[in-house]
Length: 156
Image (cartoon, rainbow, N blue to C red; front, side, top):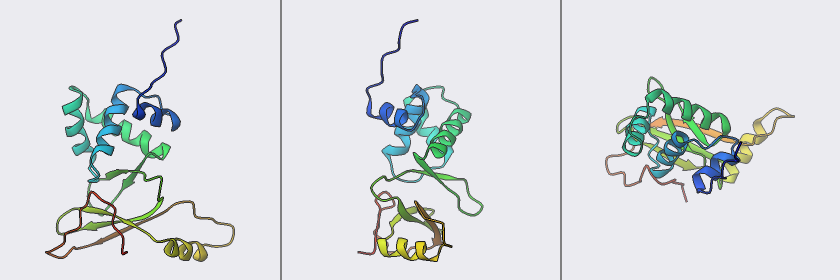
C-alpha cells in the first residue's frame, strides 16, 4: 500500500498537530473560521464553506466544528437562546472574555489582563490551577461604538 504524501499546507499542519486528519472538509471549515474573526454560527460557516466546496453539508460542518472544539482549536460560545458561535483559539493569549452586544448581535474578543487572570486563580480552591480562563459578558455597546468585532480589544 503506497504511503500518502505528507500534508504541507499550514492548515493541514495545524490540524495534524491537533491530532486531526486534515480532510478536505476540515481544511475548508477551519480556513473559514480563521478567515474572518466575526464569531460565526455553524449556519454562517456552512454558507461560507459552500462557496469554497460545493456540496459540503451542514452536518459535516457541525462534525468539523465539534472536532475542532474537542481538540482545542476553536472555542464554542454559547449565549442565551442563540445559536452557538465559534472562534479560533488565540495561542498568544488564552485568557480573554467575549462581549456579546444584545443590540447589534456582534461578539467582541476582550483581552484580559494578567491581573484579572491572577485574581481568578487566587479565588480557586487549593489544588486547582487555571490553564485557560473564558468569560462571557452580555450587554450593549453605545450607538457611537467604533470597536471592530473582528479585532481583539482591551482597556489599554
